[in-house]
Image (cartoon, rainbow, N blue to C red):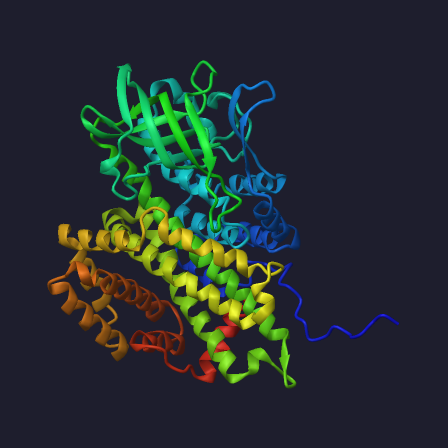
Amino acid sequence: MNRTHHVFNQPRPLTNSNLFLSDTPLREAVLREGAGWDCDLLASVGQQLGSAESSELGRLANSYPPELLRYDAVGERLDDLRFHPAWHLLMQGLCSNRVHNLPWQENAPPAAFVARAARFILHAQVEAGTLCPVTMTFGAIPLLKSHLPAPFRGWLTPLLSDRYDPHLQPGEHKRGLLIGMGMTEKQGGTDVLSNTTRAEPVGNGEYRLTGHKWFFSVPQSDAHLVLAQAKGGLSCFFLPRLLPDGSRNAVHLERLKDKLGNRSNASSEAEFFAASGWLIGEEGEGVRQILKMGGYTRFDCALASHAMMRRAFSIALYHCHQRQVQGKSLVDQPLMRQQLCSQALLLEGQTAMLLRLAGAWSAESGEAGKLFSRLFTPAAKYVVCRRGISFVAEAMEMLGGIGYCEESELPRLYREMPVNSIWEGAGNVMCLDVLRVLSKQPAAMELLAREFEAVKGQSRYFDGAWRQLKLLLRHPQEAQARAICESLFNLACGVQVMRQLEPCIADAWCRQLRGPAPLSEKVCQRLLLRATGIS
């Protein structure tokens, strides 16, 4: 008697899908870049992460963010954090899949960077906050393998393990370790040379650090790499949470940041009261040492944003296959179909390029790969991370009102997106970095000519865009850096789609270089089949 209506034409949420097998562009790119040996594991991981249970873990970790426990019951200083159990389960999955250290293994398989990038993309579609400790640890390991201070040499084994160990113990007694970062201060931001934290030597490579960090990432990490001013200039220091004798280091957490997104992950403000740190490298080399880590973390920012774009698109596509308007599925409505297929086309190019870039990061790629990764990593971070914000908003609009409500995954994805375009250098910093590579490394222009001229004549749209970029690069101006960066990345994507994908999709991609253009029905059919795993 109290029922007023029957609920119908309401799509079910996307759960219990295989995130790897349903993504043809990703599967093909993994094979193409030499990591086919990992496909069975990727399929297993994709099935697990695509489950309703994994989705719920992501929701819980963000609904119950970490708490700062500054004191214990008797007033002793703690500076500990308490996480929801969902956080720990997600971290266990990341570490067991070696997303934090796969390429750094002594007998790493070929194309380990590619396999690791694919695993990263799958995990990022479930929960992005847990990626922060993972990417910083990943970036720190190669630096620490050659510069780990003598009292901490026993840390290398747990750093390279597949275990997650959140217990507060000296590092050499733990099964797994995490490394954080602390660079930013109130007065500086990107301008780390203005840092005021001081470091005074006490002997044997040990220093006492006094000062603050405005952003002290993942404060529960076993150690942090931080920047401080020493006599020889800005330097990099290894700052353990526990000292070799087991006592707590003199690092006080003042508060946790109340962030727009990334709420499952702890970011803090910290004060150093003559905290013990060990010099990494030489005094005055701080920026150079930290930047060795920064390239890896910047690449991960692009991977994470791309993964969240893929998840948002998958949610929208699944919705549009179910939702009916005037007796016709949304996916078959001409305007909506164009909207979906434009997103699918964009993901095709990004997937191909990002996995190509992962291959360039691999050790076997040599000097040419180093230059490719050095040039295109900041370009990818700039373009993909900024593009993702409007991309997720568009997916939200496809769902309408229910996409704007918290029961959907899309609001969390939307809040999460801006952090990747800010962290590890905002957009302008990335564009200026690209200009720096082009101006200081003459081989970079030779690389571009070799890459882009190789496909000359296959598309007049591509050739026209390449001619325009060459004009800008004759006398590159700082004010044009954003246009240069975007064109550079889009052309690099174009090279990959023309080399690797079927002609109709490649032609559609290149047409978009001149602005949005309608896609043919043939292209739409192919894109939607590939986007659901039917190649």
